Length: 200
Image (cartoon, rainbow, N blue to C red; front, side, top):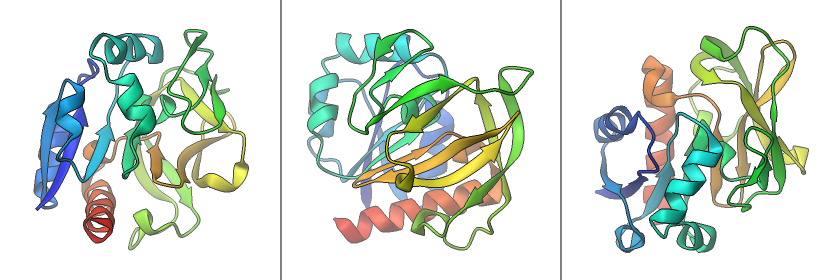
């Protein structure tokens, strides 16, 4: 069974992502320290909240360096996706810096952008069997601006287009919450777990 380390950086949705991963056949484990990565096939960096608080929690738990050097598949969700980039204007601080780019406020109002919205995709394998324009659940006020636009695999719109999904090498980022997005979200997670299983 696919072993997935779910990083606890103070996010409030650990139980929902854990249950969703179990439902699609993975064996998730909540990880609070670097040694929890040792037997993992992949890492999930979930998130609700702010990048600054998440980075501070990762630093206290000694997880920043291990995540920066992690060579396996890594899935960042919401704030977890934002943490993959160089820095965020939300707190004016550095993030993990494993994907070149920055995190900026989105243009739409009201903020945060909450609820269901269309995600327009380009055929990335994580969206296999999910029609472009399918609805996913968002809760955010910031979004990534990758330095290399070719890594963008999904977009959405709230007062203007913003990046909803990326893939850069072993990193997949989702600005929305698949674990809260019904059948489409579970299909996406199942696709990701299958991809991890093949890689392992």
